[in-house]
Length: 190
Image 1 (spheres, rainbow, N blue to C red):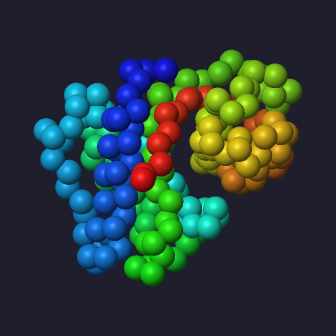
Image 2 (cartoon, rainbow, N blue to C red):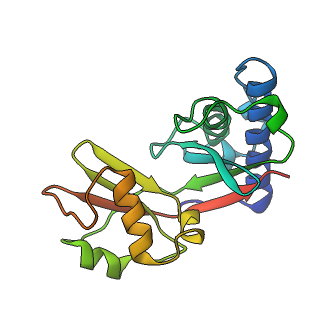
């Protein structure tokens, strides 16, 4: 994995995510502007993140970026606000939902294309529970974080849901398809 963050750094990023969600929900969409100088050099490096919100174990929002943003701290604050207010699958998080809202952060490594020529080769190369996967076929793009393996531990179930999310027929292998993998460090806000 790229430069690993310590558990303390991950917890600090998860705390920033929670603060950003609370600020956005309680203060009319306010953007939290963390002072990057107050964080470790590792937390100030460019990076890609996803922020996931869950309530009663159910997904409530998840927004991220596969492209590195200028600093991890800024990326976490920005994506946390977006997860709370702008996930198109959900209404914005309400003030009454803040209590009991689980906020987690996944810091991603840079996705790397894997050399596969068909669905069966892809199945054989995946590492369940470890790999995050991106599928791109033209304008059809989707990703699943490594944590999705917890809900879909069977390779075929994971890939079927990912293909559906990308708007592709299951097991389709269109010309020019690119599949990439990445790993992630994960932390849940206290």
